[in-house]
Length: 198
Image 1 (tube, rainbow, N blue to C red):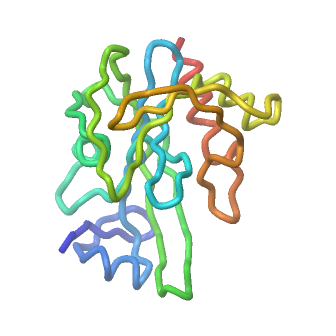
Image 2 (image 1 turned 90 degrees about the vertical axis):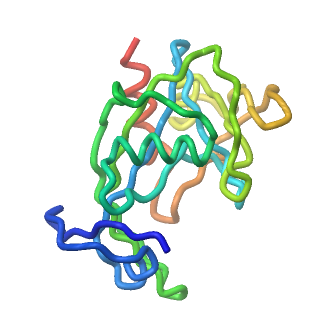
């Protein structure tokens, strides 16, 4: 069973609890949202296996006793199969995330730590966690921003799977968003942060 550290609403640690209990009771905890980018201003979205929508490169809970950077490294390894040096990972923000699915008795209260890290352009040896990730989609960050701001209706990207890679067209509908979110609000600040690095 997965245990995670729990917090009050001011991010003071108050103990440790199982993941199931945390979501049943809606207890505050930490998550990490991992973003990879490269020197060509590309951002790497994972394609979720369950819905085929684009989401963070990797993400998940920060486990009990684990640092956020350690969680970043572990989630990247677990979900896309690469062992990264994360000592230079850039922290972007801590988002306070609340979501309730009353019909499932599931309540999320997370301090989402958003980090990004550079991926070597010659890296191709991905191994995807099949129940979570069906592949990666590499998109130019500026093109993606134009798409989410309705300056373009479609952008060309590269889909990377265990069978290889190839071109793919992406539209705004391909991004995973919650009912109360928009893609530009959810992903725009990440895209802008990557574009400003160069």
